[in-house]
Image (cartoon, rainbow, N blue to C red):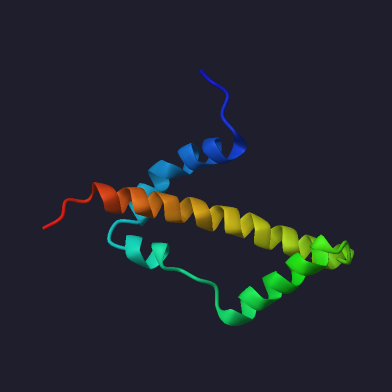
Length: 89
Protein backbone atom coordinates (compact mmCIF):
# COMPACT_ATOMS: atom_id res chain seq x y z
CA UNK A 1 0.00 0.00 0.00
CA UNK A 2 1.38 3.44 -0.90
CA UNK A 3 1.78 6.29 1.58
CA UNK A 4 -0.76 9.08 1.09
CA UNK A 5 -0.67 12.71 2.14
CA UNK A 6 -2.84 13.63 5.11
CA UNK A 7 -5.35 15.33 2.80
CA UNK A 8 -5.50 12.35 0.43
CA UNK A 9 -5.94 9.92 3.30
CA UNK A 10 -8.70 12.03 4.85
CA UNK A 11 -10.38 12.47 1.47
CA UNK A 12 -10.33 8.73 0.84
CA UNK A 13 -11.51 7.91 4.34
CA UNK A 14 -14.44 10.31 4.32
CA UNK A 15 -15.49 9.71 0.71
CA UNK A 16 -17.82 6.75 1.39
CA UNK A 17 -19.66 8.71 4.08
CA UNK A 18 -20.04 11.76 1.87
CA UNK A 19 -21.52 9.62 -0.89
CA UNK A 20 -24.32 8.79 1.56
CA UNK A 21 -24.86 12.40 2.64
CA UNK A 22 -24.33 14.47 -0.51
CA UNK A 23 -26.62 13.06 -3.20
CA UNK A 24 -29.07 15.69 -4.42
CA UNK A 25 -27.21 18.37 -2.43
CA UNK A 26 -24.09 18.66 -4.53
CA UNK A 27 -24.86 22.09 -5.96
CA UNK A 28 -25.55 23.56 -2.51
CA UNK A 29 -22.18 22.31 -1.28
CA UNK A 30 -20.34 23.46 -4.41
CA UNK A 31 -21.87 26.95 -4.17
CA UNK A 32 -21.33 27.41 -0.42
CA UNK A 33 -19.63 30.62 0.66
CA UNK A 34 -19.22 31.81 4.25
CA UNK A 35 -21.35 34.76 5.27
CA UNK A 36 -19.64 38.15 4.82
CA UNK A 37 -19.09 38.68 8.56
CA UNK A 38 -17.30 35.34 8.92
CA UNK A 39 -15.28 35.92 5.74
CA UNK A 40 -14.18 39.32 7.07
CA UNK A 41 -13.10 37.78 10.39
CA UNK A 42 -11.08 35.10 8.62
CA UNK A 43 -9.44 37.74 6.43
CA UNK A 44 -8.61 39.84 9.50
CA UNK A 45 -6.99 36.85 11.21
CA UNK A 46 -5.13 35.87 8.03
CA UNK A 47 -3.65 39.37 7.77
CA UNK A 48 -2.63 39.39 11.43
CA UNK A 49 -1.11 35.92 10.99
CA UNK A 50 0.95 37.08 8.03
CA UNK A 51 2.17 40.03 10.10
CA UNK A 52 2.92 37.82 13.11
CA UNK A 53 0.42 39.69 15.29
CA UNK A 54 -1.98 36.95 16.42
CA UNK A 55 -2.64 36.46 20.12
CA UNK A 56 -2.73 32.87 21.39
CA UNK A 57 -6.54 32.92 21.35
CA UNK A 58 -6.62 34.34 17.80
CA UNK A 59 -4.08 31.75 16.66
CA UNK A 60 -6.33 28.96 17.97
CA UNK A 61 -9.39 30.54 16.34
CA UNK A 62 -7.56 30.94 13.03
CA UNK A 63 -6.32 27.34 13.15
CA UNK A 64 -9.95 26.23 13.52
CA UNK A 65 -10.96 28.22 10.45
CA UNK A 66 -8.04 26.79 8.46
CA UNK A 67 -9.09 23.26 9.46
CA UNK A 68 -12.71 24.00 8.55
CA UNK A 69 -11.60 25.39 5.19
CA UNK A 70 -9.71 22.16 4.41
CA UNK A 71 -12.81 20.14 5.26
CA UNK A 72 -15.02 22.41 3.14
CA UNK A 73 -12.63 21.98 0.20
CA UNK A 74 -12.85 18.21 0.55
CA UNK A 75 -16.65 18.38 0.68
CA UNK A 76 -16.70 20.52 -2.45
CA UNK A 77 -14.38 18.11 -4.31
CA UNK A 78 -16.58 15.18 -3.38
CA UNK A 79 -19.73 17.07 -4.41
CA UNK A 80 -18.14 17.89 -7.77
CA UNK A 81 -17.20 14.23 -8.29
CA UNK A 82 -20.70 13.06 -7.44
CA UNK A 83 -22.25 15.66 -9.72
CA UNK A 84 -19.95 14.68 -12.59
CA UNK A 85 -20.96 11.00 -12.24
CA UNK A 86 -24.68 11.76 -12.18
CA UNK A 87 -26.35 11.01 -15.51
CA UNK A 88 -27.68 14.07 -17.29
CA UNK A 89 -31.03 14.23 -18.93
